[in-house]
Image (cartoon, rainbow, N blue to C red; front, side, top):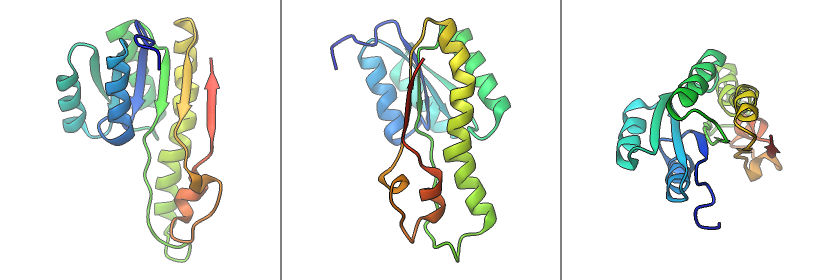
Length: 165
């Protein structure tokens, strides 16, 4: 990545309080951008935003709820006056077979991993267009391409996707 490549850009990162999301927030800021850490884990999200300083902001987000997305996008625009990027990194899984997977578990995995990605794209695109465009990256998995008997719900929830607005 070219140094300063994200100068003046604002990215919202789901699953932002840990793992790939947290590291992406750090990278956005190290490249001159601003990162909105979006997560259900408020304590970890706020702690990371504090650690990263003025270029970071935390918003509570349940990716499976459209109203939560609307609030997160509004808070992003209020704080940084723009949105140029979205990383859909939030994800969950259950480790069991199709025979042992309850309908509730299946729905929860797909609500977070698939519905959450859809709602994120749907809600972010208008804000990104208003900011002059940007990019969306949806985290996928090799398990979206080939099945695994121990992760049926997770496999069903993952697709490869990347879009530019």
